[in-house]
Image 1: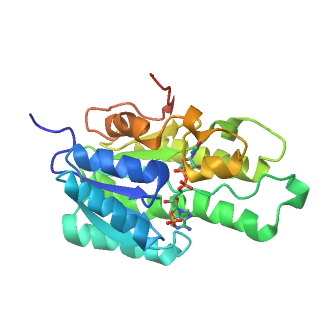
Image 2: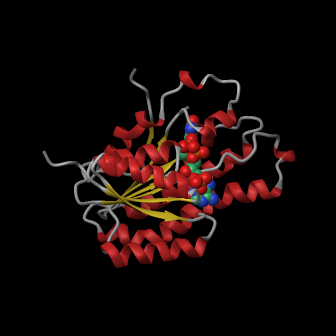
Length: 238
Ligand code: NAP
């Protein structure tokens, strides 16, 4: 049986752990060659091992997403090697600090905006021509439920995700009438290190593991997914 992403090229940011790593494994199992981006080489290598053991293939790109010029070079390298990009999972993110706005350190705020917003805009800028070279380019941006709420102490992270949603939906509007579709995913609470940092008192075993999101992410990055400008919230089924 043909796999949904057979012979397709997918890029995943934040692939060294958590949701990104699980998504990369699911995309590779669905047939895609996955380009894995994160800073932690060990985490990328572990993801690569897991993907190979399952019969898939990956290319590792260790980089800091705040090295914005490297994101331009990444687009150029993908173009040279494959001439297109079929799927882009904009997953990497940082939580910053859960603290009153008045206490948020400027360097923490800059990191939130740099990773969660500017890097994603720079990736859109770098990868949009490649997605348009695909017969069905798909971009999926990982947001959060807090983007549309105004919860005390979550302001830095919430602002960054609200800006990300604006970026993603504007990009989607610009893609109307083309082969490219851009959508948003709210994963809900997931058992990862970011969630543990945000909610240290919570029992992680009560949360779905990141692998639970794999099928939805594969679906939303497949050529058969034709919706655009959607915000989909993950619902666990166990
Ligand atoms: P995580 O376990 O902390 O993983 C974050 C990933 O982002 C890591 O692979 C990390 O890689 C990468 N990253 C962070 N800063 C980076 C940088 N400067 N350059 C390159 N890569 C960087 O988080 P997660 O829970 O899987 O979160 C994934 C996405 O889901 C995020 O956008 C998050 O906001 C969103 N989300 C998560 C939850 C949840 O409950 N877990 C809920 C709502 C939304 P390195 O550290 O190796 O660079």
